[in-house]
Length: 257
Image (cartoon, rainbow, N blue to C red; front, top):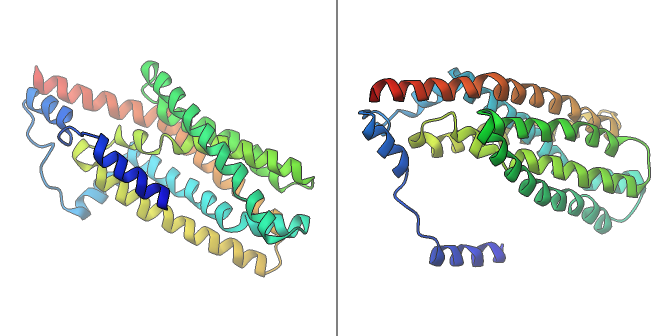
């Protein structure tokens, strides 16, 4: 927390942001469009976001991915402690450090890959997210299979890499399919539904364990959620996001021409 406050002070001193949505406003003005900055009531914004296949797919994928993340963050330490019968402090390190270090590396790799893929493929960002989620499925299963503690550490580290590839492109992918003036609202909506789903998922896993389901088995079922997330992202990358971007570009071209 203290490090974050210090970073905030440094950024306040160093960063000089341009006017918000300056590039988008200029493009809309050149195209003769005036609606980009109009106020939209919150309910209307939610309905329009959910009715668009491009944004709805990414939003649902975010709910699923956050559900898995919340389950892991809530239960990994307990899982490691029970499975290997080691102390709580050591379990906390094992349940936290490998996946977070992997996520840092995955976020860097995912950002670089997405920037390169996007130059050649309109759905490149969602595509990189899909690759990360698909890679995370076997890593989730590896962590829940009978095995040694080093094997679980390796599985968690690689799972973190895959998770980081997804996480690094959450907002860039969503920003491509919502108007620039609605981006902060889209982030708020995604966080609302995403972490609500995550909280419910963590609670449901605890309930399942209380009713006798082995924790390793309960955690393994999260791979099913990841599979659904991967399908949503593949659909977005191959179909919905490219279609949305082409339609918006055609609309701008028609207005300008």
